Length: 528
Image (cartoon, rainbow, N blue to C red; front, side, top):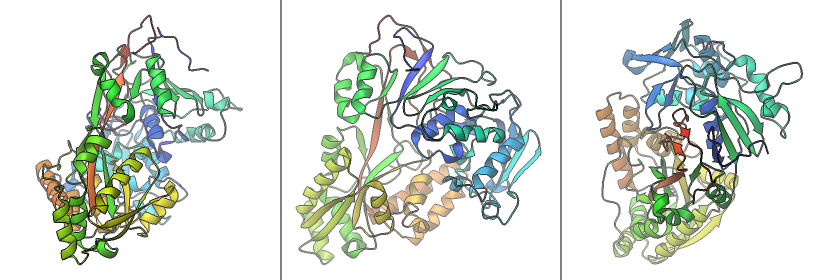
């Protein structure tokens, strides 16, 4: 195929995608593969660094005014779309408008809905977004309805990326149907350019749907030419195929599947090539706080004390996870060390008796069928039986699972939450604010007036130290109220070819733009 390589090829980096992107329009990027591609093809006003920090992108600087409600961005005059045209303030405005437009079907409107006038514009009651202004070609002002601390992080997400609207019709051709001449970056009939037009570090060169995407440097990017002359993202859904490709030298970076982690870590030569990163992800068993016995906090605490989470982490997660005593992942401001619920079946039975359930009760735990979920839920089923809780495991495919859980029809469910941005707010507001009960993310239907109030206070608190204290306080209250059986925060591992230099396993998957990555040639294609 077009992505074939020789082992000595030093100008190209080969990376695997587990799923195939469907669209390369940032307004519709809904999964990791689409988001990662968009982060390379487009710029935002700001972006994430590999460490998860907010850094300049199409905007060279910004100020926050009026108590956190007004953001003023100064555009980098050097930023150019891949056709050489300058990125102007009006391009930012039109990009935000197309996401929020009444006719838009973007599933990411929520990223921008805190902008003043966003709701009126999106519903067709206004012709423009009141809170977005472009007084000149180099200035963008965005005003919010009220302060929202993580707003800059929202602007680093794909929905806020800048596109040249005139090119969107051509990009749509890339997002439909089977692979065509258009999808490989060739000209459409009539001469229109059949490729997404952004101002990111890279430009789409070839796209064979379901097979690979090839990116080449944007010749107009102000950062200059990267050391690599192309990036090739190969679509390889099967884990063991990805491993075989890496070991044969035809992939340069491999996200190590959990089942193979010990084998890789046990090899001294390989260990030095491995990078780890705590995920922005929490794994838990949600408890329907409105349903039957689970409405009693004593019952929920009993379930936590009945499960030997340390053993689950050690055996089922291979020890490569951090046991959770809250919802805020390690490394984020607001994560606080606290003692988890002890494994104490006797104390759990005492709590059940106090709550009026001396003989236990029947409980359904719903899950999607997955190797991780199967192992964890079956282990929890065994632990709960020891205190008289008779668990029936119910497996459903994702859409049926999600609908039932979001509507509160189930007792309990195994799930995880991936943060969209590296801020504790993203693990507290969606998961525990009462306004998000059900489909908004709070699928345990947890409700606490104090928690709601503290979350809202944290969203408008700009002082870092004060906000971290609020996050920790919220997380502590939630932990004590036990809306979940708290499990663990996973850690991910990647192994990087010894030929590759400068790659950093990013905190946020959008954070590595490969601009500092280089590769030296080698005589043999192997990573064994």
